[in-house]
Image 1 (cartoon, rainbow, N blue to C red):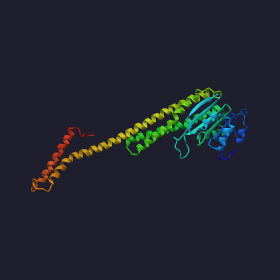
Image 2 (image 1 turned 45 degrees about the vertical axis):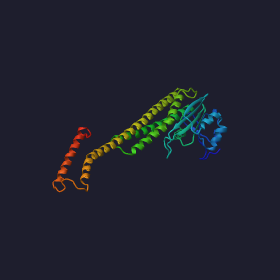
Image 3 (image 1 turned 60 degrees about the horizontal axis):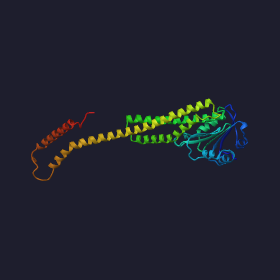
Length: 329
């Protein structure tokens, strides 16, 4: 099989049990036997050579293979005798991609062989491979499985924390200003929170189940680390729910403030209209081009009319204030 950059074999390692490993190609993978040590095969399952290997050489149960190659798998952890089917979702950190468009990482873990698969680039798998290359990686199948879920959850926690910080910044802006673009930003943050929760809720259940699965290659320390990771995932879901609710409350507060501002302006306009409506009526009545308008030839009549207007406006304002329509801030 091809080992070029277009090959589906991203990395293949024969772990030495001390954190390091020997790199293998397709020939080395084909020649491996369980007595040689723990094999880690990392694949891009969309590549033709990887698909052929999974179908003909990986010796996987068809049901397991179909679950690993599902187009949109749900996060889960399922034990099959001494093997584990593990599917988790990680934050998409690729350039130009939305973090909420999460990457599906699929793993089939046996006591002496680990198969990890993805289509889009997963930084978690890249980091693990780099650490194994440097001699600082996991030394066993159980260690690699635990490291994988811990790293994925770390990135999820960081993303949820960033989302919470963005919502907190919007909350501060709502208290100090009422910018029109805040409503759209808050709606986008709520959409992101909902998109994250769609995958993280079942992932919480999967990690909780993984912490209870008894497998010979998962020791007590591994179970404790997975249990801690599952608990951290649960707290992250709770924080995500709180962030989503905070975004909704902040959006409602923003809408309320904008409505209050609009109502205040309409109220002022209504008061002005109420004051000038009778004045306008009198002016219109006196301005008709017919005979009989009183005091047309008197020079003092204009000032008398102004005085009447002033008194009339004063009486109106007194009535408005008496009724509580005009209040001091």
